[in-house]
Amino acid sequence: MEFFDTSIVEQIEMKMIRSSQFAVRDRFQRMSDDDHCLIASIREHGLLQPILIRPLSPGFEIVAGHRRFHACRSLRWRFIPCKIRELADKEAYEIQLTENMQRKSMDPIEEAEAFRKYVVDFGWGGVTELASKIGKSEEYVSHRIQLLRLPEEVKQHVIESRLNVSSALELTSISSEKQNMIVQQINSSDLTVRQIREMKSLMKTKLVDDKSGTSQFSQTPPRELNRKSHILKLTKKTTLALRITLARIDNLIDEVHLTVEPAERAEIVSFLMGTRLRIHSLIDETIRYKNACTRKQDLSS
Image (tube, rainbow, N blue to C red; front, side, top):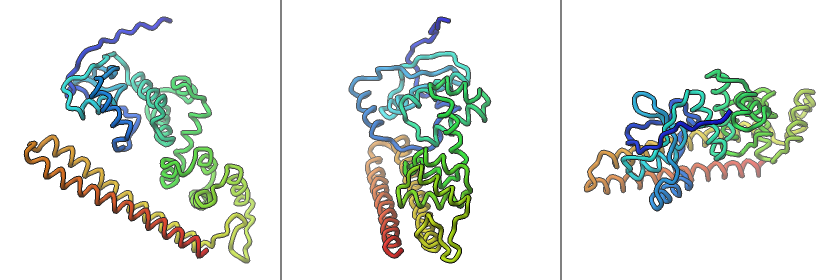
């Protein structure tokens, strides 16, 4: 069946456009180097490709081109070139998801959450249909969704690329207590998938030396593992709290640019940027403390 593009390309006032109600990506992300490059390119050459929007009362909703929209908004554009197309919710979500998959802009957990929304939350289709829509295998989609069975702490390892997807999938079939133990071993010993499977097998057959109180796959006493785990949890929570503060400072800076007169703006922004730098320093100190404690723990074990 031949496809007929019935889109209309027009300049639309930016205040009439809002982000998608079916956002593929929910987590807050700070502006990346790619975003800065995009802003610089648009400033110099203009917007070479219109964003895709759909009419949705009141106004319009972005389907594809969120980064381009926010880049143009940061340049204080009043109007933006748009391709306007009538799309159902399901079609809009599929286009948005496909765009993000092609740009490889989502981490594995974001992909998993987006797939779950499509299949489970919205009920738009099964794994087979979704895989066909985004050009991936059924195994790829189902494996990503399995990652959501992991506890939040382990998911964070995947998000931060400290745990790859293949290793994470091996953990979905065991208890959270054992997951945390294996994750610690992965981080300290860089275990392969095969080694993880061997550890799981040892756990199932309970090959534990009762006299020494240590397993065949662990050379670190439980008390030392607990202490290291507490340090990691504490520093992770501290870092998270500081990053939340950093996000709020960023929001305040944006608010100042929108609400404060230029003559008074410089002093306030300078103060907030100084505060922002101090928070960054605190984050660095937290990371150094965590690394120092971990090294000390490793030497004493």
